[in-house]
Image 1 (cartoon, rainbow, N blue to C red):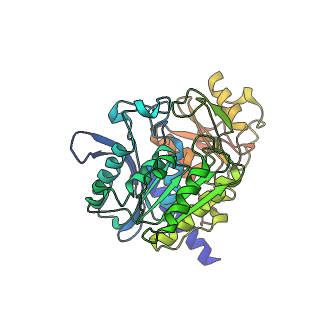
Image 2: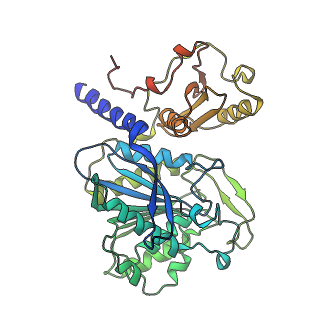
Image 3: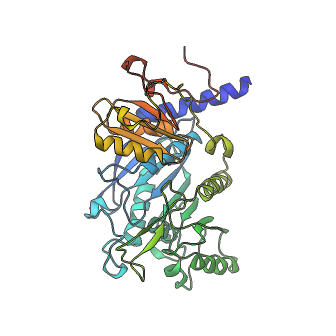
Amino acid sequence: MRRACRFFALLAGLLLAQLSHASGPVSIPSLDGKLQIPGYWFEAEGNGPRPAIIGLHGCGGGLDSKGNFAERLFRYGGYFNAERIHFLPLDSFTPRGQKSICEIPNRLRTINESERREDVFAAIEWLVKQPSVDASRIVVMGWSHGAQTVLSVIDATDKYVQAQKVQPRAAVAFYPGCIATNKMWNYEVHQPLLIMIGELDDWTLARDCVTLQERLQKNKANAPVDLVVYPGSYHGFDGPGPVRQMENLGNTKTGKATVGGNPAAREASHARMFEFLSAQLGQPLLLTHAQRFKGHHYVVPPASGFAAADDLAAVPLSDAGKARYAHFRTLPSPKAFAVTEKGGWYFNAGEPEAIATTFQLCAKAKSRCWLYAVDDQVVWQPDAAARAGAASLQRVGAPAAR
């Protein structure tokens, strides 16, 4: 029991440090010096140089509607930092004058995998200069268009890639489009690669990645390529959003595609991802999969009796805020909803770090906030001094602060 308490206290310290000084926006010069590539640096606590992951967004860009780095990246930042792994997601589109390229046909796009590959090697050069980074343990990870960039980054036959002094240790690709890489008859990978894709993906087809993996594994010159196809899952299966149809897409035959989360596939893919990272980085995991994905990682404040969870009229927000709270009520647990001192709101759902991630979002926006509801209970207190804020965070199993 004492060992467990010390263990959780350590993790609490790691994440609380991340919430304060260790996270922040950074600007990374491109290799040719013509661009400044925005990134968000989630620096993991720990002794000695530690591994780092570069994150690559999809065709929709890495920013939300307010121009901030997307919420899911903060969720991953928390996951990785708890394992003493740095995380550096990049924004490849803003410095090139784009918010999204999903609507643009491939032949008309001015941003492709080659440009984004250059961003990755610029980020690697930046990481190598950080004293806390182990340059021999850098992983590149991407989603959709970012995953296609991952395939380009580890193309062992490409002269540009061959010329780079520091190469990634391993790579992870969530639902890439594998069809273009399949057409490269001499394509090779010399770093271990994990590809994860949905069986029902009608945007980037699973069968193309199956063909690629089978072809690569026939050539003994290639590093291991692991492929996992998740049954009953669409594009974006690892996200918390509901399944829906996207329209006005530039690179599908119909201009449409189905996207949305699958809770079972999300949990399974995250577990597989961490198993892969642990093996490739030579670093045992601090959290079990059950600890990472089941229930809240932070102590949930008791119900306050302020209002019933479904009482929208009681929510201390405008009609727009009440509408967002109503949406929050439909999302999967674990989840948390916070109200800011200026009448704003932030929430996170579908992952055990929901409470901490919600406070991270508040901190990112430089807003003081308090929890209104956690899962299906209201914890809001009329007295501001009694409300649950970021300072009250306590990881489950950790000794209470004195």
